[in-house]
Amino acid sequence: MMFWKDIITRMKRRLSYEDLRRICIKFADPGREVEPLSSALSSLTKMDSSKDWFWQWQLEVSPSLRKIADAKSREAQALQCRVEIMENQQGIAINDFLITFKDSEVRDFLLSHYYSDVPRLTESERWGTLINHYVFSLLTGWGLTGLYWQQFEKYLPLDKFSDPYQAICRTYSKVLCYTGLFNELLVENENPDVKSIAAIYKDKISKKILNRLHEAKEDYEAWIQAGHVDGIDTFSTRLLSLTNEYSDSLESIQKAVDSLPDKLSEKRT
Image 1 (spheres, one colour):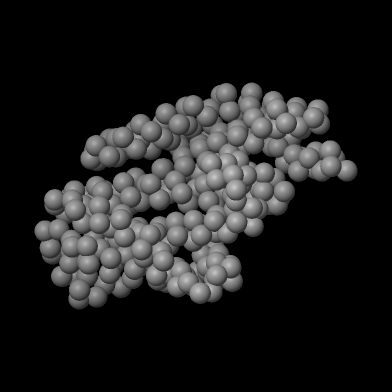
Image 2 (cartoon, helix red, strand yellow):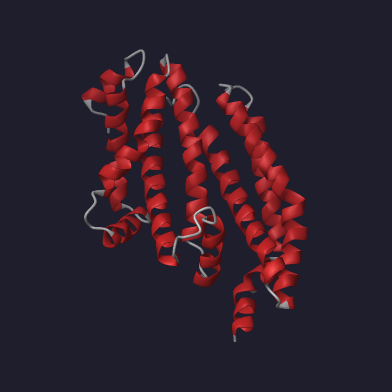
């Protein structure tokens, strides 16, 4: 639903920071009652009830909104909003993969690898940091996509640039995390079955597709950042083709990958 302030804002040559902040918060607010954000936000509150996490998120998203506000025209603001949405989609993809990973022990291994630049974090602290990042990225997703849809949709439809990039980010995050995991297991784990699974994944997935995913993702980001609009279907086809290729390659080794938690448990027992 659009209110009179939103209608007036659509008539402006460019939006102010306050315009952007108001609209972003308006679209993010309902997300607090929707899964999976609702449960994640509840977990965050249980960990530290002294903080107003919705307010903390507003502080977190403020730099992105200021970048959009600083653009010199409405069209330039639309471009910067696309860039901010895509940067946030990268965070959503990696956070969602880690937080929804079914096996807790493998997930802890993945988290230790992901937060290896902060080695002093305990398992509990890593989990808390992940939930924080997850909540903020989801709120930002609700806020920025709503903002874009309401104010900038005419320049380039949201789903045209957002959906293919989201798909490539999810695929790239999975391959990157699994590759990091299996690289460590090849070095550190003595179980021959675990080493075999790691070697299969690296051969069938990592060596075959990781660099191509990275290149396609970077090419698309550079193309969007340059302000291009025409020809997006060609890029979208390339991204979706790679995600489909990944799915086909993974299918052939899925049973081996799914057996990893059991193989890791065998070593401990």
